[in-house]
Length: 186
Image (cartoon, rainbow, N blue to C red; front, side, top):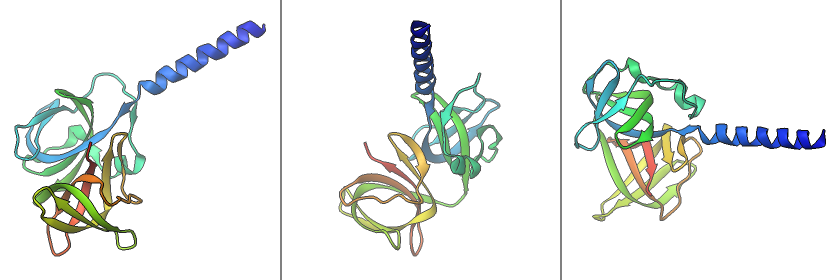
């Protein structure tokens, strides 16, 4: 009896571990919609060639994707506006990527900058960055900030970068630039 219980418990642990490891991590990328097809979309990032994202996955896939980010986006298959800037939430690698959801950022012009954090004021949520050419930009971390880490996308409401962190930000230019998306550099 005891041996059967131990064997059953070990089997259950192996099954749980397998189920957890099968969960896909969702990441994000900001780009411009170049084409919409029945089962995929083409999104160009940084003026490069468009990448294709499957919008109608086959089968059920378990994903790690925060509910507030999901609620602030739409089903990827519903995007119809070619030319809009979008934040694509996806899983997969290379040419095998599936869009889980999309946040349509509209037609406004977004700027991207990769650099090093030189200062961060937690109270005002202002961050200063210096790019590789020495140009410094100070921007507001927006209320709807999305942060992409090695562990996936998460809400940036409590995100606090540290001096010296390498990051890539996407922001709306203006009197006070507002960061919408931040990727922690690898």
